[in-house]
Length: 258
Image (cartoon, rainbow, N blue to C red):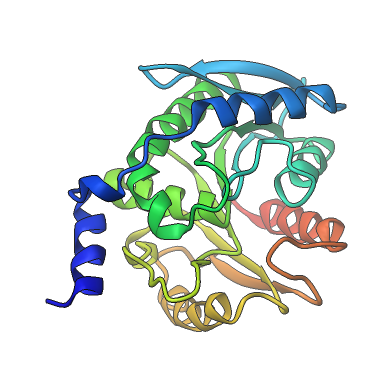
């Protein structure tokens, strides 16, 4: 086995100590402080992952259609200006209660392989966020994840299955860094809940290539409501296309039969 293959195998098993970075909780707190200073919609709540509290932004509806738990991309916060920030507000306006959770972060400059050992830490937060909405909001619980958040969500589903959620939305799924391959295949073929795979036509080439594979898998999905949707002109962060992203997500959710 060559060095690169050894690194990949070790990351997959979580057994390479020199590559395991503890999450940067100080940076996480700075991100939350930045977010709180500019927050217009919703309130910051704190949930426990069993070891420490983490922040999330909640918008409650009096008569919700259900709830959506959102996971941001690498190194961001729950109200990031692209994708999760606009989506949580748009979904709330469409009748959904939303909870956008803070995911573990590392110091700036860390890449996909650096984040892989953090995924088990993210599982506890996903579990806590999903349980919070299940316990407090009537109706279905949808998990929506962008970029690195989608890696975390897909690995969590691969670990525990999808029985704790009622639908899954992956935004810009499969993004890795140059020369870094996907460590663990997404468990799409095994999923029973409806899945929306949504991405922009101007995505990273790696994401577009993997989307072709996912399209083939989705065509054989156990849920006939699963779909792949492209947002014309959108890049990985949906710059200037957040409204179109929100419209597509809301339309798909509106067609689901839970």
